[in-house]
Image (tube, rainbow, N blue to C red):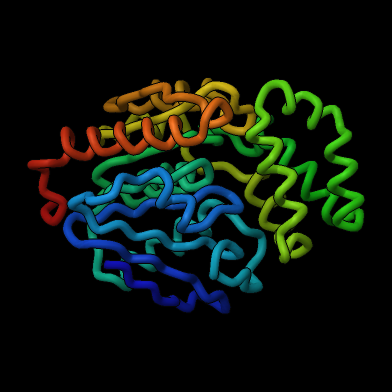
Length: 277
C-alpha cells in the first residue's frame, strides 16, 4: 500500500512517498530524479517500510526559497519526514545524490542509522568532485543561453564527445536536464548540489561500523566505479559489488541491483532489531 502526503518545510512543500510496513528503509533518488527512480532499483515484496522524500525541486516537491541547496539541506528534510512519521531508526540508502544523502545521515545521526545502501555513488569525501563537472557545465549553460541553444552547445562540447564513447547513458541523462519544464529554476539545484559534498571525511566513514552495501558499475563517468570502491574501502563493514553497467543494458542493471539489495537486507537484517538501540 502506498501513501503520499506533503510535508511543509520552511516555504517548501515536500512530497513523501510511504510504502509497506515493517522496519524502515529511507531511500532517496538521484539528482533530477524522483520516487519512480527509486522504484526501479528496489525489489517488490520487501518486508520493509520504504519511505522516499522527493527533494526540493524534484518530483512533486517545490523548490522553496532557501539557498543554497545542499546535501545537508536535503538530508535534514529526510530526517524531518522520518520524525513526522514517528520513525526513529532506519536503513539509509539512495542512488547517486541519494547515496550522498544517506552517507551524510549516517554521520550526523549515527544513533538512528543502522545500515547503508549506496547505489552508484557520485560523491565520496571531496566537495565538487571532478566527475560532476559536466553538471556544473550544464548549470552555467542554462543560466547563459536559451534552452535549445544551450543543449546544442553542450551536445557539441568536448565533454559530450567523451561521454558518447565512455558513458552514453550519462550523456542522455545530462541532455535531459535542458528539457525539464523547470530547467531555468533547476539550474540552481544542479550547480549547488554538484558543487557540494557529503560532509563526510574518510576518517568519519571509518567510524561507521554498520552494515553497508555499495554498488557501482563501469561505463559511468558521473558515477565512477572508483568512487564506489573508495567509499566501500573506507567503510569498515561494507559489502562492495560491481553490477552490470546501465549503459550496456538497463534491465540487466536494475535486475542485478534488485537481487543484491534483497540479499543484503535478508542476510544482514533478518534477525536484527531496528526498534531497539
